[in-house]
Length: 275
Image 1 (spheres, rainbow, N blue to C red):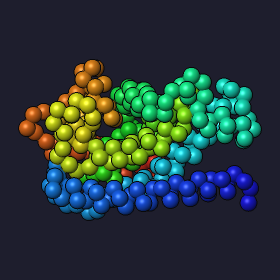
Image 2: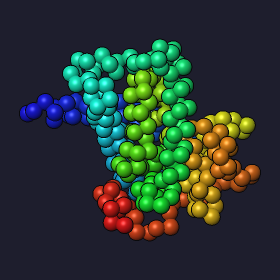
Image 3: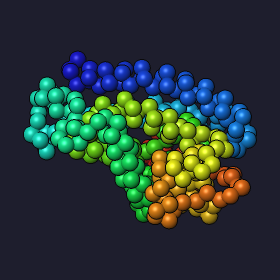
């Protein structure tokens, strides 16, 4: 067997050893929390519609993202910095490079979170318009919004809307070591904002995206589906006029108007190309 398939298998194995225990922890945490603080009372997450589809995305997306991220970092180093040898690539990316890598790791982590969230805000708005919507509509197609819905992203949406941003910032010089801090935070927070929780965090709703904040984004356009684009920091929505948090009201329904979106992952992956 050639080295490339072996490396891919190794990446899949490494990813699964992290994803499986994290999944178990998140399942337990949000089962307990949603039992006491559900935003939309009803069936528990493990009885949600299209659960099998969400589970497929939950395990497919981390593997796809990691393989593509590594490939783009290697390509970027070769094209921009003329680095080709495996040992040189490892040394180049190991602790970052250039001025950004000289900053303390905690500063790099904050810089990464703020810069990536700012870029993702505008990319998110882009995916709600024109020909990009058909890819992002897959994420919005879940009618039972739960923590495990967080990974439902079409690969095109994932590539442009997440992976490319990570690669740009790492090629710019930020150390991959920050992922030891940023990675767990983004995984938990992404599941958190999609969880069936009625939490607004009071005055902190202007500081950090919450489940209610993001659930308004997943409602119909008439209810506010074209608002709350920020993934982590609502300040972008406040600054650019897209913040929406109605007082004493909670969203009631989710999903998209297009009933042609298939329920299974295979059909969803093909859906944008049929439009």
